[in-house]
Image (tube, rainbow over all chains, first blue to last red; front, side):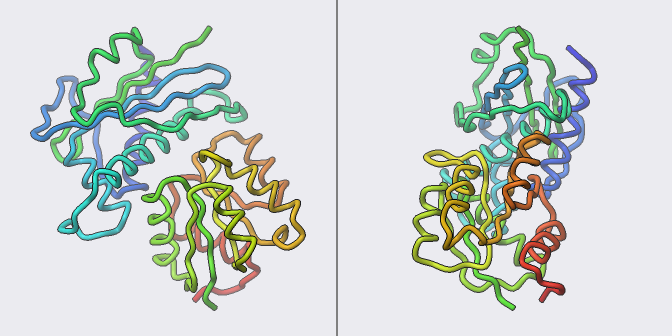
Length: 156
Length: 128
């Protein structure tokens, strides 16, 4: 795994979470944080000079915070499942859009597919196994909740 | 001056965030309209006048670049100021959009960036 890719993925994810959703994340220790609430996972695929996929998994609690902050509503206001999924899809989409110019040439043209919520249970381990070794894994700590990103790159 | 705006993005959360950020920036908004893709946006523009349109690029049904192309073909709306807010990172694509008369804002964005871009594209010297 490229340390450079890992640093790029971590930095871009942290910057995006801060600027998009006013969420302050830090790099987590190598050991996984254990989330106390159910997790949500999403993926986004891209094609260009090379193709690949980005996966993101975090707790429902973190996604709720992202949603509330993006919408600018009070925490007491109820969030719908649609809003939660929409906010999470948009978050992974922005992270992916900002990672690609950093790992490829800035002139490179990528087509990013619509992001998808994989599961609201967060169980993506079997899906990740099917993709082989990731090019980079970023593990973030958001208020003691885990936020994991897996970047798979397919360079033919 | 209050601006009438059309925000075109397939994400309802992102549309809400863009509108919230414009308000935070000090720009006064009048009528705020929303569309979920380029086709819906064009349909709205046929019968309504706005001060500027904000468009995402990657959307289902009709993407933002095609919407801008269609606007440029229509004499009634070709001069409507256009702002693209997108995750697009390719300098080549961004330059192509600028050549079509659109200003470009990269996601994520700040209130200041949105304010400065709106003031520049509408030819307004000072904000609200």
